Length: 78
Image (tube, rainbow, N blue to C red; front, side, top):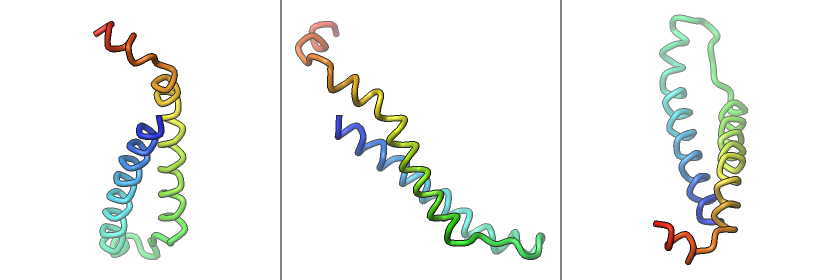
């Protein structure tokens, strides 16, 4: 179950990092059109923290189900 949580956390953090990096690249271009537009560091921090929270919440139910599953029964029902 911890592997499932770690995998979900890694995927969510990687996706959030890519999205926030793209936003940081686009914001200077967009600020030419909309004066004063910026992306403070707190937005990046909140984005990464939100990604971690969503990962833990969304992966906890499948992880708990996997932890309770009897491996022999699961393989027998294939």
